[in-house]
Length: 345
Image 1: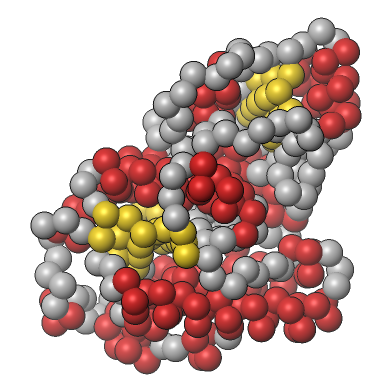
Image 2 (image 1 turned 60 degrees about the vertical axis):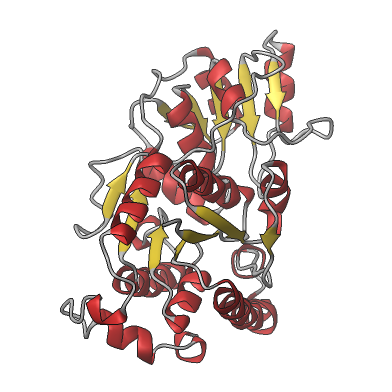
């Protein structure tokens, strides 16, 4: 029996799209039919990998809350959140998948509303946030997703990290594989996020005689996967956690210069991990390029997640009567029946 699995990604930052596309590909390689959704910055990478996706209403909390525009949270982010949940509810009802795998808390809420079996992928847990509002928000949606999901996957380059509860499933970092050989083998690959720039760093490294690929440059043409370029390079410079996971799977030393609150928290948590260095400014990046960390060594966790999801579905009847009725928190089935988008906002 072929399973149909919906895969949905969070729209703030393209890394969410590449990470979840990696899981979509791993599911397909195991025989599942995949329906993809997410929208936002990652849409072009989804298209480059040959997928047509459903694009629900995008949300933006980084430019509003972290951008010191709290009034826009009330006028833009919260209404967009409600619309995104409604869009996902309608999409899930139309396609009626056997399961949803997602790193988008709003897609998870929609799955709970319609009763779609849910599998969550999440790395930004509450301890990664210093801001009390962000920490509280992360705690609420993490607690909800842990209670509603059949499995809560925590992809990490720190398997010994104590920031994750004991009941989550730790898996290796997730990266989007690439079949094509890169057209060059650069010394350094600079991968900014939507919220950072490495133009000056790339220019300085180039002046020092290094062959640099700057993914943020105007002349860079997006590719289906960066992983082949990272494997070919001697060093990766990045801001976001998705590229950190890519570098880990590529086995290439990585220097992290964070830009957003979440990225800074990830960098603080990552500091001292073999294979990675944290840079507070451009000079630190240049110093790390002269004395890079050791090479990291990790498997690709996307394969493990796909295998676990499909094995779990194969071992469970679709009849709701066979689902767990109590997990010590009021019952999985009763919570799904009682939750809706309005109560989750």
